[in-house]
Amino acid sequence: MKGLISIFVFLLLGFHLRAQQGENITIYTITNQQVEPATRILEHPKIIDSVKANPVKDYPLLFFQAETTILLDTIEAATVETTEQLSKLYPFYAKAGIGSIVMPLGEIYYSSDRSRNLHYGANLKHLSSFGDIKDRSKVVYAPAQYDRSSAGAYFGLNERNYQLKMDANYSNNGFHYYGIPDSSISADSIAQRFQLMKGSAAYTWLRGDSARLNLSFQADYQHFLTLPTDTTKIWRSKEDNFAFKTRGWYNYKNEHFYADLGLRFNGYKRGILDSVYTIGDTGFVNNNTIIDFKPGVWTQALNDRLKVELGVTITGDISAVGTDFYVYPHAEFKYAMFNNIFIPYIGLKGGLKQNTLQGLTQVNPFIRTTVELRNEHNPYDIYAGIKGSLSKTLSFNVGVHFMHIENKAFFVTDTLGTYDNYLTVIYDTLNQTTFEGSMTYQAGEKLKIDVMGRYNMYQLYHNAYAWNLPVLQFTARGAYNLYDKFYAQIDANIETGRKALVSSDAPDAQFVEGQSFVELGAIVDVNLGLEYRYTPRISLFLQANNLAAQRYNRWYSYPVQPFQVMGGFTARF
Image (cartoon, rainbow, N blue to C red; front, side):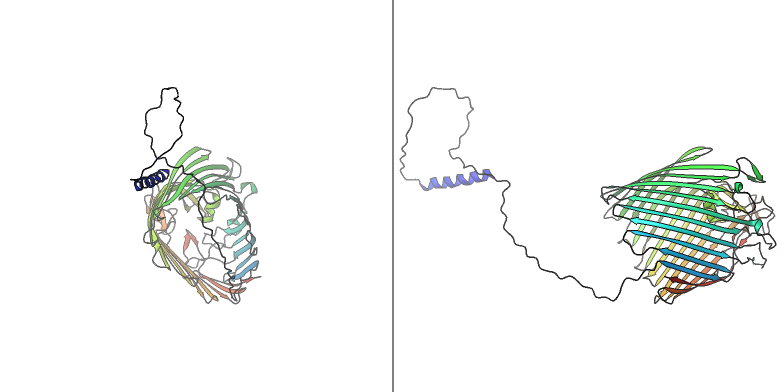
């Protein structure tokens, strides 16, 4: 800037000098005629311009700004005229009914009112049955009565910087090993009862959504106890399970970094160690601890169309026989195409599942409570597919899974007893390929339909078939709302290709590779539920189960109830 100003001044002076050519100029000066002593000039020669630019002052912090005036117009507050109000909440909800085979039902719930950060509640439930069960030949089986009771409570607190959740539950389920086609069997001799007490607590520390480290902690505990009537207290199977997990995550730009650290302990014992109560019933103590560490990162790119998650799980399995370490990769890739209409995906995952007695009885309650427990090792599960939406109301998903599972649990008939009414657990290595597809249709809150199909192929190392697992599965669910007065729900479940491992002298037994089995037949189970809401607080319901009246065997020698009807009412107060 200074150079430009100097050039400008120089041009002006030059122009001024050229304008005065031709005039005589006389210059008078006063000088000092004394000659100063000669000195040596030490400076180098340089050109001295005869025209010097005037210095320009620099004010780097001074700038011109025109004064502006801001006028604020007054905007009137918007008003919304409506007759709608928030529906009133009632803290209590009760449901009561009775079934066609003398099945009393009772449920009551309590929940807190509307609150921004605090919620809590409790519930009580009971369902029992006093009916008999027959097979397809109308043969009455051993007493099959059961009862299921439970109680629960929960508490939650949501604040700006943290969340706290707690819950506790107790359940008491009694039933009979009724898989004997003989109604003269004493009910007490085949009775069983499971008690489960469990609770959990979770705390989440929220420090911010971006560039902040957030932490969460969760602890779970459950105590499982069997109560058969024909054994002493010390010979009841017991199980204590404790799990603790903490997670830290950090968001930076498009990346989500996380790390999980978890501990799982299961203590399973029965009777007195190495003592024999009856044939095949020996006391034991089985403790198992699993430690997991799982770091990973989730990111997205290409305008959020590509989503990638990469991680690894390092697991240590500690038991009485030693310690094993496993490394499970975890990777998933998704890419959204055509504005999220089609989303192809591919992934790889694995893990170690801790089998527990309580978990096995959730799947099949008719097993002996002295089964061996092994952890299920899944080195890999490779999956791929495509999901998306064909319209605003129609979505779909098709995919395929390739799995390798070691120590997969299968339920088979226990031949140690007098009758084949007990099942036990065996383990084998399984390779499974599954093709599946699903479709969902939803038209607002009026109609919703879900359909899912699955085809499974199994290959085992030591068994001919994957016992009790279906080859073909089909599930359909539908819900319809008519004028917010009438509600209808229907669900259907079809399974085919199931086989059961039995003793060689079992009726209709077939033989393959030195093993005897029977075809369990198809499961065709269709259920229909209807509800009429007389008022927003009172409604009537009707539930019809097993509409096809199929006496199929869910497990070998365990036929289910045929057609059942239950009716009752619900109330809010």
